[in-house]
Each structure stands twice: as structure tokens, then as C-alpha cells.
Amino acid sequence: MSAVRDFFRGIGMLLRGLSLYGRNPRLVALGILPALITGAVFVGAYVTLAVFADNLAGWVTPFAEDWTSAARSTVRALAEIAFLGAGALIAVLAFAATTLIIGDPFYEKISELVEARLDGRPPTVDEVPWWRSLRRSIADSLRLLLVSVPVGIVLFACGFIPVVGQTVVPVIGALVGGWLLALELVGAPFYRRGMRLRQRRAALRTRRWLALGFGVAVFVCFLIPLGALLAMPAAVAGGTLLAREVLGADRAVAR
Image 1 (cartoon, rainbow, N blue to C red):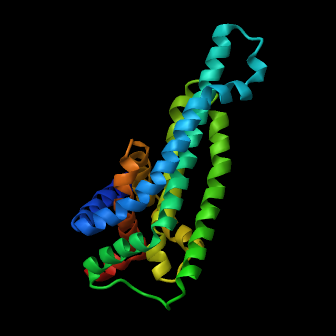
Image 2 (image 1 turned 120 degrees about the horizontal axis):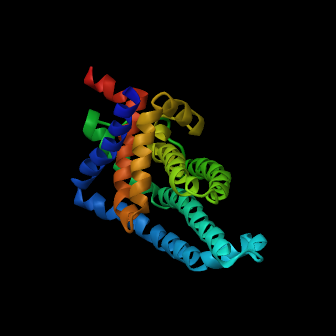
Image 3 (image 1 turned 135 degrees about the horizontal axis):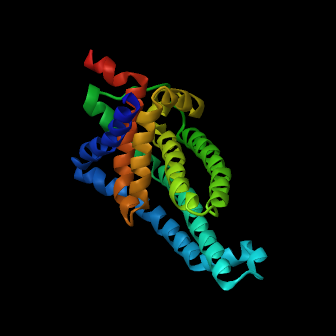
């Protein structure tokens, strides 16, 4: 019951993030702009994948050439679904990472304002040049993307399994994608505290289901057409709330 409660609390953090972020019209425009730029590129790439999914399915199933028409069509339909599912997982994570890098100043400001609203001012660490901070952010994002590629390949292969590939595999994909998204979206508040990817993983593991609830909610929003554009800034705000929760900052303020 505790895990279920934490999972739904995580979903609620995205909604709270939307509420906190949406109160400032100027930030709404700034937050959507980087997502709009990145989204146009990734939507185009995914549409291209969808158009050529049939050709790709034929390319990876040459063994089905001599099968009956029904069997060949079935296995290639499964391959198309697997391509689109694995592509969606990688595209969502790549979109989040790229958007956070492109819109770093905007999303950093959103995160700072969320923390300032909650306890007066955001915590700071020794200042570092912006290019060094950006370099660290890119390095951490690439590490997470490198994790997503083998996961996507495994899920692609499992997508060929009838029924399981169309029911269990998408759920596993959403959980994995949600976890990696949560790690991405708590980046700004952790960087302000001088903490890198390793510390993020350790902190989120202490509240795994809370992080999964938040991450899965963001993942599902990103799959909705135009959902990523509208939800990205709210996800950054929600990620700040999640970081504060797992680090105990909100409990300290309450005391």
C-alpha cells in the first residue's frame, strides 16, 4: 500500500508542478519555446520512422519470406509495433535530454522559482562557469541515453512475443522510461546542490515508487500529441518538487 500511495503521490507532483509553473505567464512562454524547437525535430523523426516501419519490418524478418501470407503478415505487423514502441521510448528520452540542454537557462529559472516559492530562496553552491555546468549536464544526459538504447533493443525483441509483446512490454517500457525521465528531470535542483548523476540515482532509489509515479506520468504525457510541448516545463517544476522530497528539503521547511 505504501508503494501504491507513493506512486500516486508521484503523479500528483506533475500536477503540482503544472500549477506552480502555470501561475507565471512569462515563464509559460519561455518554457514552451525550447520544447517547441526540439519537438518539431523529434516529431518529424518519429513520423519518418512510422512511414518506413513497414520497410524496416521486412528488413528484419527475411526469414518469413517463405512463410504463408498470414504468418508473414503477422510477424511483420509485430515487428512494426516493436519498432514504433522502441522508437517511442528512445525518442521521449532523447527529446527530454535535448530540450533540457537547449532550454537550460529557462528550465533552471523555473526550478529556482519553484524552490524560492516554497522556502524563500533556492539553495546554491559555488558558482561555476556556465559552459562547465552545461558540459556536465550533457555528459549526464548522454549516460542516460546510452542506457536507453540497449533497453530499447531488448524491448524491441520482446515485442515479437504475441500478446506479451503488446501488453506487458509497453508497461515495462513505460516504467523504464519513467525512471530515466525522473533521473533527467531532477537534474537542476541536484546540480544546485553540487550533486551529479550518481547521487541522483542513490537519492531516487530511496523513494523508487514516488519517482516512478512522477516519471511514468511524464512519459505518458509525452506520448500524447503536443503533450510534450505543454508538459515539459511542468515536468521540470514537478522534478524540482520530487528532488526536494527525496532530499528531505520539504520536510525541513515544514519543521
